[in-house]
Length: 244
Image 1 (cartoon, rainbow, N blue to C red):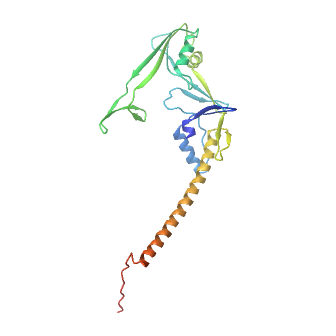
Image 2 (image 1 turned 120 degrees about the vertical axis):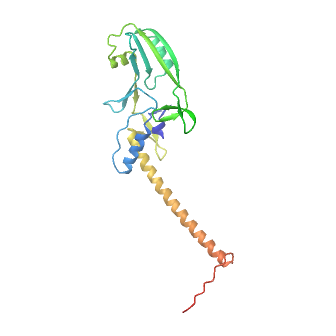
Image 3 (image 1 turned 45 degrees about the horizontal axis):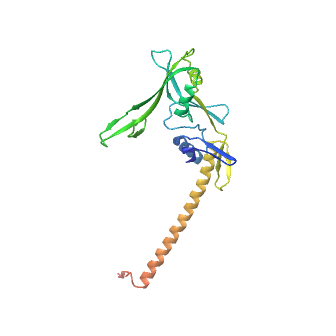
């Protein structure tokens, strides 16, 4: 679950950072490992994130990007509807207000309802992709009036200018191993390999334990059955055989 939930922490002399990964890819890689095949390289994944997550040549760094676009029919209004991973709304709003590139910042909070009626369940449910549950999606949108946008249609330029990129480090994966010793892992695939090996070992131990329990239960039941016959608690029918 450490790869599903991710974790970050700082302690005396130690720190760790394990990003989140898609459970479906984790399951696929576990199946490959069980078939004695090499797992596929996984990149971090965050549920609900609509921006971009891009691997780099340096395998220990991942770049995440938010979403920004020029409002249709305008030349200076930029709409931002997604921030990079680890960039919070309050912090980013302060950053924009200090920027010389931005003349006016208007922060809008929109409440949008996405509801669909299900005749089978008879309840209102929120539907987005394959996720079905009732909720209100609260979306944050910035409308930015910029001094000038010389390369407005260059998305990469716009993302860099508005500081809509962030880095996720993959070189600080310190976790306790099965022996309770702190260990540094190179990547998520190594963590998965260790997990599968340890899990298989304990599945075998559990199977052996259950087998012993079943044999002991069977022997105990047989012993009690014979004792009940001896004590006449159970009467066995008499079988008569006639010779012809």
